[in-house]
Length: 505
Image (cartoon, rainbow, N blue to C red; front, top):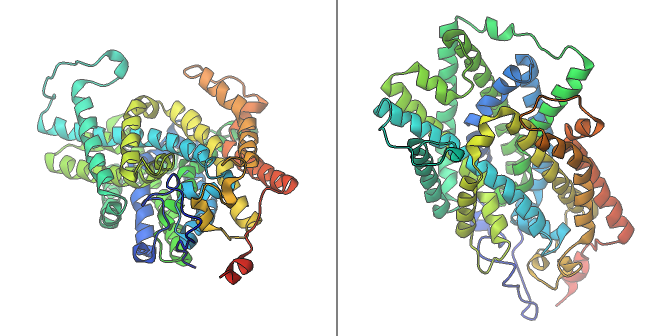
């Protein structure tokens, strides 16, 4: 069913709740096929951070190659389920994530989950911008070996030299160009880049195989998880990190599925594009990293560093351009679309999609992403698992509200009215907010413990640390159960009577 707004004159839309970017997508713009959505996921998945996932799990966490790939595959299959479920209302009603959140959190309360998602996206935008800037910096070193010799005018606490900062700023400006071009600009970019990026990854894999004479040494690396305690303190945290990796898009997937031709396209496109691509590119990452350790005497987990070592102007040029395109497609799709809509939702009559995107871009640089990404312990244990504890309860609340309580029926017109069904208590559903707090609470002590001891040797884990290691699963289960129980107890959900509405003149 494709819903369009059909409002009686006496109950107009609230200008404070709608603009052209947040309004339901009309049929003319629902052009995304299974391949478009599959290519979207290939474009988002084939990036430097995916490449480094398995390498980090093998080199830092002590997993075997097989264990690392199983964890990545399992994590992506798990997150695929809420991804497809949350995509359903986007495709059925053509609404983006912040508008969908109004059904459960209220017309004003939806800003709470929207801004939490936007905060995480700003951080990811910064990380991907740093990676793309790093690739441009390596291109610069090929053209000018040793650099330009520009004086370092930045203070030490920034963590970048002048030429690195210029490269990051240049890549940031490229992202800004696509932000200003709008959402549709990413479709052709994803479609064209996906086959190219897979090809580049396979070329690196062939190079690694040829130089090492096979992958025997890589597959011979033994697992360090030789006790129950190590499994509890290592395997489950990294599984949570893998689920958390895409828990961001699992929340805001309606921002994309609203453009799908139908439910079949969104479901199959995601199922075909996400898990297999993540496992394949992670395998490439761990294979090339392992071979680099044999050839260069140290493990190079970043493909940018590997290509720089391989050398050759043509090879470096083509590879860095491809890596930059990979990073760009991921950044625009995964880290701009959602926060731009989320920030716009704060004041739709004043903040457009483009303005929200620009706010995201500026906030991303202020995040100092190079410091987060370069510390692998901070990146996985604090960043990935940390934001998973925030987003998991929101994901559960949306799914419980839409599928269990409303039976997939929404009053779309009232999603854009301040005095409609989703007003709750002055625009806030206190039950959803309470469930969100309850879902976050069990993970908070473990998170604070991680933050307070960054840079220190890991101490013996407490019960709260074990709970935090499963932050996404705990948050999803507790938040969803709390919302269901409280909604039934306080009878906050009133399912619209569609039959009565149809009889009205």
